[in-house]
Amino acid sequence: MFINDKKLLVVGVDHGFSMMKTSHATFENGVEKLGGEATLSNNTLVYEGNYYKVGEGRLPLMEKKTENDHYFLLTLAAVAKEMDVYHQSEANVVLAVGLPFSRFGKEKMEFKSYLLRQGEIAYSYCGKRYCIYIQDVYVFPQCYAAIADKLREYGRENLIVDIGSKTIDVIHTRNYVPVESESTSIPEALIQCMEGIKNKVYQNCNRIVSEEMIRQMIQGEAVVMPEDCKVIIIEKLKKYAGNIEAKLAELGFDMEMMNVVYAGGGASVMKNYGTKKSANIHYLLDIRANAKGFEFLAIQKGKF
Image (cartoon, rainbow, N blue to C red):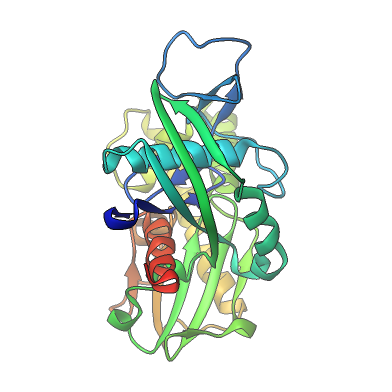
């Protein structure tokens, strides 16, 4: 959100292990340093004299997002996309970002320090010049942020299940507040599921299926591929959805006794392939929900 009278841009950024999300944009999290000037300006970021392709393909999974500068470069691209929405090229910026609930306390300050660079930051992206000052960084628990502005729509007690690329975040809220002792992160999510699907299709059908094709199947879209490949993908997605439902039961959650809100990229898996269907189960299909929630919480906190 751009606050014109203060020349301040509050940017919610969801640093996914597969996709980057802001309130208005979604793009892949690939980063590749180039040996020299790029042939095309598309997805080209120039920072401190170096050229990068940012937003093409997916980064290999890493343990922490602070291991190298990749997620900082992705943040610059995300800020540029939001500045374009408001027709700005210079701004003071407040970043609103998130971490998994179970790692929030341990990694909050490290992630904030990683993103909070001092002084003027000048760079170009997709052929446009930008100049920003990062004024502050607010870090919030992801998953909770996805429905922070919608909690009262669902009721006093909710189970929020945010199925992302690397983790499944599970937050139990009571009286609109997270119950920390009953909230957790499960380290198995969509990337592992899609890798399993690709391997199974190759073994059984001798075909190579892309992640984009799997995403289309997840969302219930028509995909051009042989029927035997589709059958395998559907079976694997149903099994994956069933495993998530079983895991929630193992954690002690009775899904008939509270509202359940599936969020993140995997919400479509649960909607289209899950077995449990009832009026108390909801699907937040907007994959930018966390980014929007970070922005909402930052504005509430900063009272801009």
